[in-house]
Length: 68
View 1 (tube, rainbow, N blue to C red):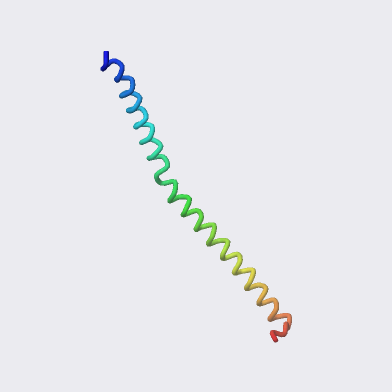
View 2: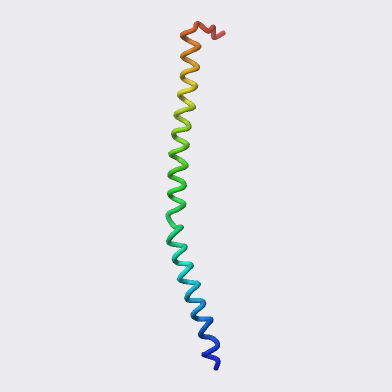
């Protein structure tokens, strides 16, 4: 009777461990992808901001702005 009562718990624990492993494998590389995409977005944002600053600086030079 004790084995019969403990068997559903063993089956439940095996199921929980299998589900845990499935989710662990599914989300293992997700962090790397998020970081890669973040750095790609940050790179393009930085390039765009540098282009705006460069444009503003060149505009001031060509329009005769006095840098006093």
